[in-house]
Image (cartoon, rainbow, N blue to C red):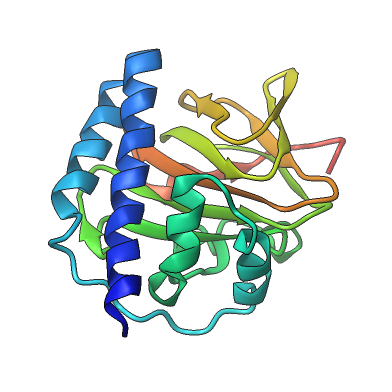
Length: 208
């Protein structure tokens, strides 16, 4: 694989780190800063692995073709190393296919991941256009930071629209859902606290 793709992967980790550092600065979340430090330490030292083909690769590539945000550009240029999976490979048994078909995920950091960490998870998130990720919650504390597209985020009883660099934070067990419209969205995400997937649960949702 070309050096340019490997360099782009290093840049992706650094860009993700920078965004999580901004989260720490703006919201005071120490776990965001810790996640950023791990990503920075891994940049240039972690050897990326070629990804296996996934059904949504072409959708991600099409979405990122005109990306402008530096993190999204780095994700586009390092696509050969981005292993997209159903539910990022960690929530398959907890999310019905009718829901998980709306999105794809990638886990770059976490237990047993490329960047192995016992108590933090982080990666990329893609959601198809005109789709709805129904109401759910989990014990893990979660942050999404948008890097391409727009979407509506429901948190409890409040729904807010977010665009690029929108920062969405879910406290432990906060009910949340996401909706896209005519365009897909791309975000980075992180988990801290209890990152055990077994706490994940779909919730009753009249909008689902």
